Image (cartoon, rainbow, N blue to C red; front, side, top):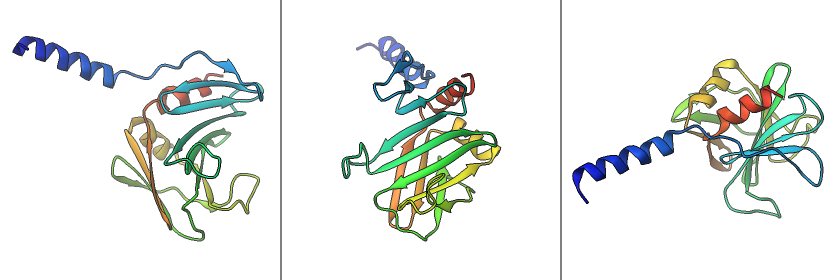
Length: 167
């Protein structure tokens, strides 16, 4: 392969990987709600507007009938975005740290899921605008908790957040 051809292929591959993620068409799920995929993120909207919407990404090996051992959820709330993190390996109480591309971010969390304070292996907290902005600009997030750590791709999260906010 000539040097010129190699350069063209390198540029095309770089542009393809750096391109924003577009959603496939929204579709109605048999159990209700409109859904759309944005890379590894699934947007789920129930009812009208963006307040009934959440973004979900599963990570890690399949565990106990779930798609992945860990799940990060971003839910649209009046204050902005609520992060809920579930992980089979999580023990509580214990510290949770979130880094985006290696930069630590402060996310004050409380045990449980929204509306389910005693939910095991789950923490949640409202994201500050700075943390939400870091997620939008980032490439990967790592959640570290007592019991382990899990990596989540941020590819597509910007398009997903914008699509949800537009509903």
